[in-house]
Image (cartoon, rainbow, N blue to C red):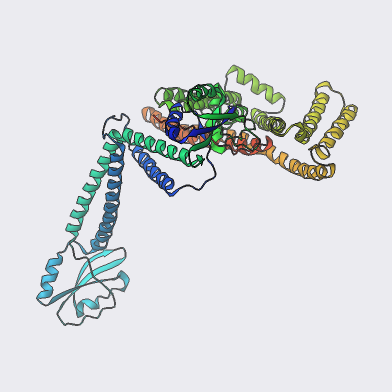
Length: 605
């Protein structure tokens, strides 16, 4: 659910403005309203600086030790400036190292010669020239004509030198090159020195990650607080020759009494009001228990607008079921649930809700693994386990199997979620605009649920459909009138009819496509089971007959194969239910989104 908000308008005398602003920050409950004003250059530069600090933190976190030490540098700014200096030095070292590698690569075919010796020979009138040409174009006759020494054949090219006297003309159809003025040994020695310098910087990075990351994060929080303070000032209107300061903020209803107690004792004047139709109140989600763990998934798409329903508690059960359906292996479910419980004891506090979410997904996978009869790729319906043996025999008698039932189940679950989404859409429209705007949606629900109820009545009771046709026609007529003529009671009939026809076309073409999208649940589940079965077969067939070695090979193949399957199938099981939620479900639920997260003006720890 969305926490109710109260809008506050503050009127403060300019001399008391900063003191009151400091106290509001200490209370940490007011979300300052940001007005549509141009951001000053000073604030923009601080945003950019803060972004650099944040990147520095992420850079060091990649090197963070499992057991960081608190108490390195006293102030995070020193850490940040040193890190920038090290990164600048490292960039220069990388460029130098790349240049040396290129120079060594070019000089390598010529071997380790002395450039000083070549210079001395030139002073004595002996000229050494360097040539390169394709091996197939090298002529042996050149050796008869000139003094040639072959150095190497490298990359299909022959490298050779021509030794001549000063003034002697050398004419060879090959590319003449000028090698580096340094020896290969000196280049390699310098490269080793540069690499050592790089290692020193890398060690310093690791030391900073272990000793100074905490100080750098504190510095980031200081910058955020300073920036938020300046933003609060920026969004304050000055009246009466800048003697009165006016600004607005949003406060959750449950936090209002604490704020009111302070304001009543202060000199600040304030007015409270409920959110109006045009107000964009910030969103604070207040779900409990199971649904709370799925809030982060919903935020990946968008927060709801203030006036609409929070979809988190409604999509959470479906998402868990769909994840389990896609992965569908009881063994994997147990593994995921156990791993989540172990991780919950070791991860930081902020990540504990995610481990609980993973635990729920593991339980859903276990459930559908038991339904589908798959345990680490083993088909339980083909085993001798009593329950599965009896179920398999029953399915055969009815001319079906578990895979066909899972196929139908995926479509049924999709239909249930789509209809549930339409119910939420009707409720959403009623809450936001009034029931007069939701008649069309109620009409579609009447059509779908009424027709389905008539059909099920015929199937369950055995009453022929011909006998129920009057009821069906009544459902069609009533729902047709609601859809085509009364879909919005605030519009005239002709506008309703045109829009009703357009909505009918969209629903007729969209509902079938949406329903078929849920078949992916069955497809992903069956592919996961097949891959597990394939790796089991490979482990048995490729392990051989040597007693100890066979067992080792089998275990390696099973671990590797099921590891790949768990990763690939787990990724698909995470992504595809999310797509069904954010596309099919949200669309049919009429979700608009676009809410801005509640971010109170507060001190950071």
